[in-house]
Length: 195
Image 1: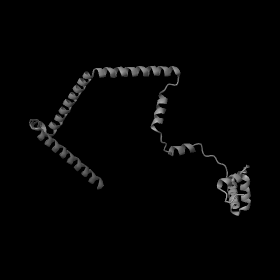
Image 2 (image 1 turned 90 degrees about the vertical axis):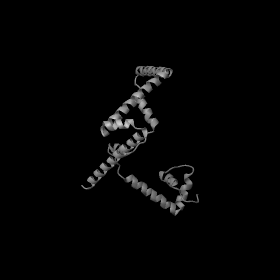
Image 3 (image 1 turned 135 degrees about the vertical axis):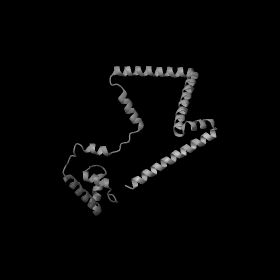
């Protein structure tokens, strides 16, 4: 016989009608302890009440409704594996053709990079030429904007001035444009608030 009260798992063993080496001392204690008898009887009553509840089946759309509200986190590597798995062809001949195509593409890419590295001077020349043309286009567009804002005589005056004067004029233009934007926002806010 044990000299303590029964634990919930031991009460469950007695309710289930388990037989075995350690169950006999539990039964003996339950017969002699009033508190454990009460616990055993209330657990038995609960089990009978649960057994008497009607069985019901949830609607077929229940799982879909619940899962649509669950935020499922999918790690990046699982998503990448799933995406790559969808790209792999289903049939063996298609997989062989795709492997061959991937090998040819990888070979061409390697050859292109090797050629570009071997001809680095050509790549630098092409890049510098492209950058020079981009800078020319940017200067021409800036000149068009400045001539539109301050006119051709103002643009000619700026071209003849020092870089400091040009920077000061540019700063003044940016400040004036910023104040104009702030003023328009303030007017829009006050107009929205007066409605």
